[in-house]
Image (cartoon, rainbow, N blue to C red):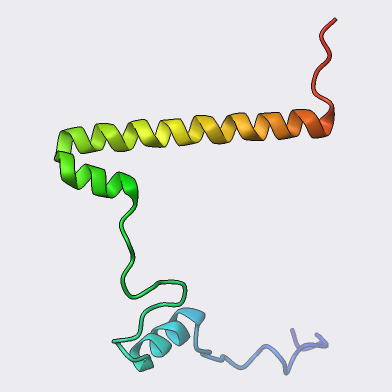
Length: 93
């Protein structure tokens, strides 16, 4: 160790403030009544949320699930159609 070119550089312990400690400090200093960026003061519930509240818990969950599946299927079909048209699709022989 005595012949190392980094002898004086790494032999002193340093206790630096971690990123976690810095973020905790910022959180404590931030005003509590401020909303996080990207969030609006009053967010409107989605159509599925409103329908779920209207129909009750079991029926609302079923409706939410059905709407989610329909949206996923529609998105999947759109992506497949776009990718097929852009990449040429598979040619059947």
